Image (cartoon, rainbow, N blue to C red; front, side):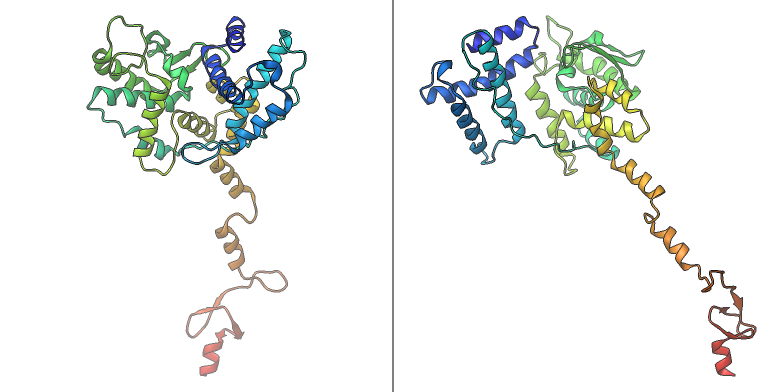
Amino acid sequence: MLEEYIESLAVRGFTDDTRHVRREHLSLFERWAMERGLTEPVEVTRPVLERYQRYLFHYRKKDGKPLSFASQHSRLSPLRMWFRWMTRQNYLLHNPASEIELPRLPKPLPRVLTASEAELILHQPNIADPVGIRDRAMLEVFYSTGMRRTELLRLRLYDVDREAGIVTIREGKGKKDRVIPIGERAVAWLDKYLDQARPRLATEPDDMTLFLTVQGEPLGRTTLSYIIRQYVEAAGIGKHGACHLFRHTMATLMLEGGADIRFIQQMLGHARLDTTQIYTHVSIRMLKQIHSATHPAAQLKRKLGAFSRSRSPGGRRRKRRACSECSRPDVARSSGLNCRATVRRS
């Protein structure tokens, strides 16, 4: 049943990544069911699926930590689709997963870097080595374009127009192509990589993949994430993350720089604008500037300046006259043109 379902996904045009993830998550349930003697789809009832859901909730990873609600959701959602497909194919008369309630997903704000933190990470690779030049070029591309991990891995030599400063993303998320700009500094590092590093990494036959391993093969997703994560940790900025960290950073810094959110949506390749809206909540620095400029109690100096200007009870500003004898400012004038200290001495 599982193999037939995965094949149906291929027929309907789902990407290799989607099929791989669904097979992985559904195989987990398949093993769990086999361990409990469940071998036929008709044996899977709603109480069985609820039991599996509780199993995921109480499951502990090797480090002793529980699965996040996002991880639980990602394991249960394909399960509902699989049983829906079996019901439509008449392998089941009733869909036992139709009424399973998925966990509520938290909505955390994405982690982002400041411009100085990003620059510190970019300077971590050893550019005296071909691999270091490659890594610096990858970091620059991530920082400049905000493309996804898989999009960078699929780049071919002909996808980057260095003279025009644009990159063509082919079959991104949702199998959609898009063209995005790339900064001059990132292009300069790509030139350096293509001139000095890639010829030493490439082997025949060359499939035109842009970024290669030391064996001359295309980088894998896990390998790429490990490389980027190592540089983030080596920078010692106290933040964690990998490829997506630069995606969030690019979007946030562009928004703070005054870019319209619809242009950021096009850069990121989001199908819906509300997906991009999360970055309006991340750019706290812009919000703080607006708060300081508009809120009447936001700036301490402005309020203290108004408070220090002494006024008479009637509301008129008191005149500051100097004492005729000691020339000190007459803040507390007793009478005439002399201050109280002069009057007492006399």
